[in-house]
Amino acid sequence: MRVVFAGSPEIAIPSLEVLVTEQIASGNIEVVGVLTNPDSRRGRKGSLEPTEVGAAALLLQERLREHALTPFAILKPEKLDASVRELIANLKPDILVSFAYGKIFGPKFLGLFPKGGINIHPSLLPKYRGATPIPAAILNRDRETGITIQTLALQMDAGDILMQDRIELSGRETTESLSRWAAQ
Image 1 (cartoon, one colour):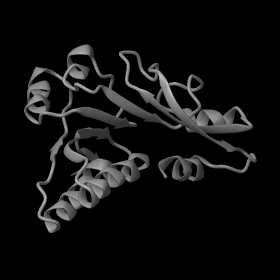
Image 2 (tube, rainbow, N blue to C red):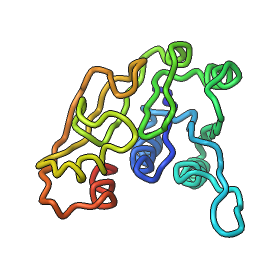
Image 3 (cartoon, helix red, strand yellow):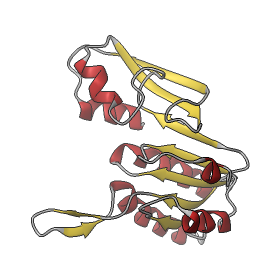
């Protein structure tokens, strides 16, 4: 199965690593593209730096080369416009896997994936849709939270729920600790 992975922050890296590890181990999956946000200026010098997923993708490309496998394309578009859709179409993907990418996928974009797409979201959907579900669970003093795997839909975080994993909260969690849990 040919996979395009979409993600940007650190929380998404373990999911991409699992896909690449499976590609190396079995060959049942082939990561053909990684879609991440454009490089941004960081630090005192304001140097352009990739997203956390972008940086990890470079290292994972090297792992694939070490195993004599073709490395995937890394795409960092500002917009998911016609030129990006053409690049993705040329990769001949089967499925899109998204974790914290930060952009909404339109119908033309989702139409590029014959098997559709899945989204990994760090909350118990439908609760806390959107970009800040982990801080929301902490601030609202929820007794539990979790992670949801769902189909991708045209509305953000609105696809069919495929599975959920729950974790009880003690009230001592931080965004960092829950992000580490959700990333695994």
